Length: 441
Image 1 (cartoon, rainbow, N blue to C red):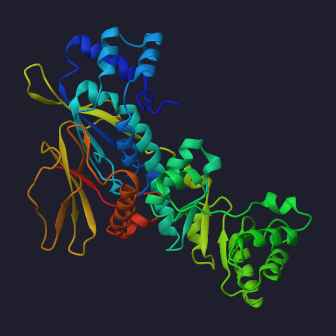
Image 2 (image 1 turned 30 degrees about the vertical axis):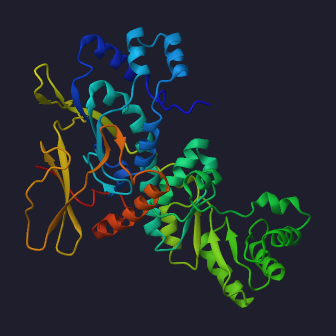
């Protein structure tokens, strides 16, 4: 299997490069932005995820012999362009919202400054990673808040593509989940993994008791026993008889969960298993998690809903050219004017405004300053502003702290801090307007 990420792109990205090289416009300095015009599902905020994966993929964005041979066989571009692609190395700058940050409509999540040819080649790769990962992270963030501090495990690998499952586990972990069932996510990203047994293990044995005995013999009494294969109440009694009152946990995967959980908690306490935890699964989403957070549930396992973005599997992000140099070397702002698909031209910098309590009030997008600009701070006494964009790649070199285990840890911590700065309305699970407005200045 090739490690190159160069063909994880659309055909027309390369034909645009081919035509621009022939027209003499391919090397014009250009600025591209990746942003969402609105928040999918009328969410109150979005969560940036996938930035670290994009930067890691950028390091492998190379057209080696195998890639060049394929493009030549398919006659995708001219021989001259194949020669250019063979030497391709991204040499531009990328600024953006760091991973784990929250975002709103119009937020320039990624700003790429490079030649047109270099920047346009990254469009599909950037969108495919950030659209998917941010959708998962946004759903996971809502679930994490709904859980009121109780741990959640991601267990949706069987409900998405095998590589998407690994990326989804990473995104959910950044947004507050505590573990994943996916072993590759554990190996690749250092995410804690968990899991014990499914219903098939119970059904394999001649009785539920024999299944529990086998599991406890192998995994110890601190294991989690799945008690709803047959009769839940009898399953709980058998579990405690087999493992003793020191049983680690029971898992419930069916039934009217609020009612069942309350009954199981009472039964465990009656049997003396007062420290045995209860974990629930069964097609949970943020709404059911919110309901169960008030019940005697100790932890949640979420599968399908989180890996598909809980009804919003993509964030609707786009990647647009917003400025370029003209034939004389002067910068020109450009923008798409199509109905419902308009973009805002020009370089931008971003600051988030806060009130005196440290609660975010407005996303401020300054036109013409460019990343790292220093607009004058204004506002009432005690109010503050902070820059949002950070350098991710400078002159083709990835800045440290955004990739690998270090980047994931930083993103997870950043996300917790940024969500805590949002107004209370951001935590609403109903459809509505963004938690804070976006203003262009």
